[in-house]
Amino acid sequence: NVQSISNKINEIEAISYREKANILVFCESWCSPDAPDSVYNINGYDIVGRKDKNFPTGIGGGIVIYPKSDININENKVSDDNSSASAQYIICDVHLGEHSFKLVSNYRSPNLATEKDSLNVLVCGLNKIDHKNTILYLGDTNLPEIDYTSFSSKRYNLSSEHINTNSATSN
Image (cartoon, rainbow, N blue to C red; front, side, top):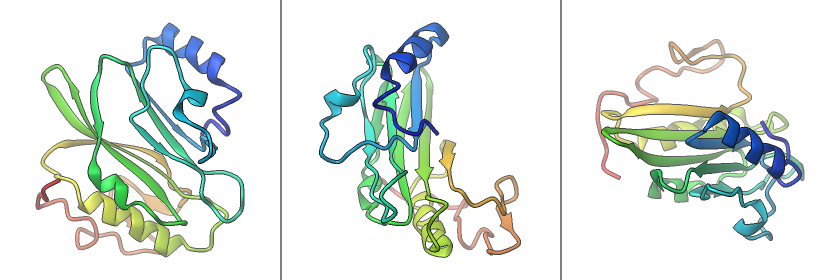
């Protein structure tokens, strides 16, 4: 959680070069829908996925994904379905040499009382991708009761009937 990317661009740029990062993923980017991508530019990286803050609380939210300019990565079109005010996600197809995988990043505001609705938004997004691929899931769901290893929760039933890991869907 970067908690506003605009005032940290220089620091992020320095760290990304030092660490030789191929892909940068930030939640709580706090990007303004009125600002163009150029405001959030990081030299040597492209913005392939960006969801701006849109929560009724007025603060928080937003996701930005930056791959190095020479990385083959594309935002998956199912990310366009993401219109919920309770959760945000971006799904990207990543190709690094002979390796391909899905990168999924999400954000859910902890201030919202819509836990079940926001969880449904994220599960619907996950169900739209081909589970035959490797999936790298990053983000901040702000749902501490979920055990992501077993997809279980004291509060929610997250069994395979909700997240369909046995069948593939086309993109």
